[in-house]
Amino acid sequence: MSIPTLIFRTIRWSAWDGCEAGLEHLDVRPADGGLDISGVVIAQEEDAQFGLSYRLKLDALWHTKEVQLRTTSGHVLHLESDGRGHWQENGRDRPDLQGCIDVDIQATPITNTLPIRRLDLDTGESMEIRLCYITLPDLTVFASNQRYTAIEAGSLYRFESLEDDFTADLPVDEDGFVLDYPGLFKRLG
Image 1 (cartoon, helix red, strand yellow):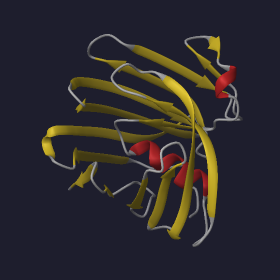
Image 2 (cartoon, one colour):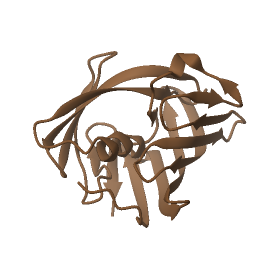
Image 3 (tube, one colour):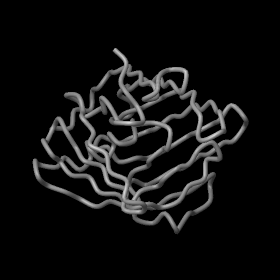
Image 4 (cartoon, rainbow, N blue to C red):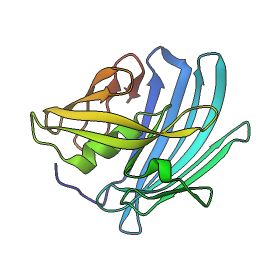
């Protein structure tokens, strides 16, 4: 999958159980030689309902450079990276996140697209990665290990959490954006 830097997209997902359980709207736009992804999520995690707005800044190679998150209840998180695995949270170094290139925001499938695009795996190829996992609604960040496998490069990828043995096969569109995340999210329109 080549890495076009001029992607203009608007995408919506609902929770697997329908919009009443959760809804997301996001926009993808070129910016500063990379991409700017902005989204809004209305969802719940267990018994906690929340609203979240987020913004991701990526370089041309799909490395995460900046993450800004804000919940409607007032939690705020600002992460910055040099794109090579060095992170700061709200201006302070986070050495425990050393080696993380991507982020995984618990409430959205957009962050699965980041490693799928960045890794550019061939069919049958697999790679383990270390990334910043962000929980909601508290916006806690910790390093997590995952594996991505290209079942059919450009259209189907297997995601595996190496922390808890969770696995999902993720169909993607022509730009690598997740179509459906079985049991969690489904694309609208």
